[in-house]
Length: 155
Image (cartoon, rainbow, N blue to C red):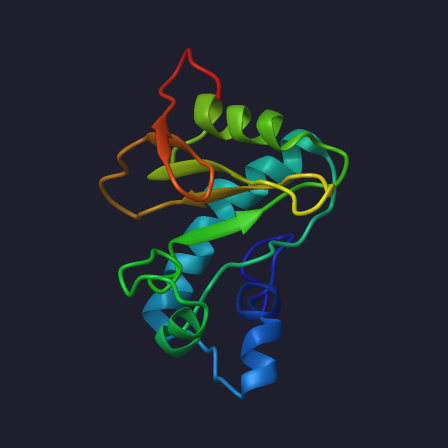
């Protein structure tokens, strides 16, 4: 099922962890509507702006999958409102700033996890979109601490 011109339900539900543990990761019809809104309001504008094909690394998570990942039950991934992604060839900070400054969103987080034993840090953008009442909260997260990065500031 296609959620938008460039993104599918298969991409939204893809999970190596779910597959490995036999977890069913299928959204309800209401959650599919949220996935469609996230695709059109977050992913499609990024695809169009940067002109580069990409696939999200984490999007919808059933409650069972979310718990297997040791994430909070309140995660917007469970509500089909959040997506984690990078775009090949685009600096993660550039992606974060584009979303922060140009799009409607609930929360955008520039996530950085330090590299282990000489490896590079891992970075990605977490972005959520709600059909109503988006907060426009821009943050960075280093795995331990959140910092607020409203318009005009950079991490």
